Length: 296
Image 1: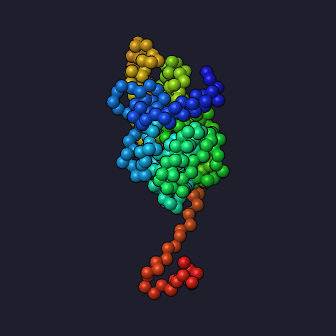
Image 2: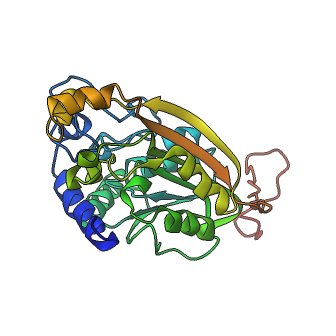
């Protein structure tokens, strides 16, 4: 079994290549990492195209859910996206938080950071920034975020408990997260678990759903809810790269479930109310506000 740094290097190198692939190629594989299936459907991703804030150039087809749809983002919130890629979820989050808020994307692949920054510049967003770094050691201070989102990324990190602890650190008291990820019910065959491509493809790095939820509970989060769950079916033409015909048949009949789940949880504490700006209507009858009165 490879150590943590070796697994991180596998993912970083693979996702640098994925950044240069087309969305269709990524969407037809497992998180863009495996050889695309000849089946004409998306294996993991959900369709963002009708989502407010969506930017096609930023959608690499790498997600397994729509966490921003469930994230309860308010105007003025500070939002952090873990594993931000080319910026898609950040731009959707920015639509929700508005010009009053701030969005920070974190990714450890330099080319992804470059693509995301270029996309933000195209959109003219000056309240969306992208920071290079690991999500198990975030380049962010304590108690910064109102909301954290992530789309099919935690399963790529060897030490998932450390990431969840980091999420707790950077969330404000009373803040919350909505994270889409891949989890298991039952055991994967060794040939899938040990393959580097399947690890980068969001499958081999997935853990049991009960274990995943237990990590969140042990980190002190409360009001834990699975907001959405859907099964992930890996087509036989991908499985056949790793398993014999007999093993593929056994895997499909074994009752092992691979699922995309979107999990919501809250950090204990009281959420601080944001100050509300009072807008003065200069056209209001009787207003005494003038450029020299000091109220403007």
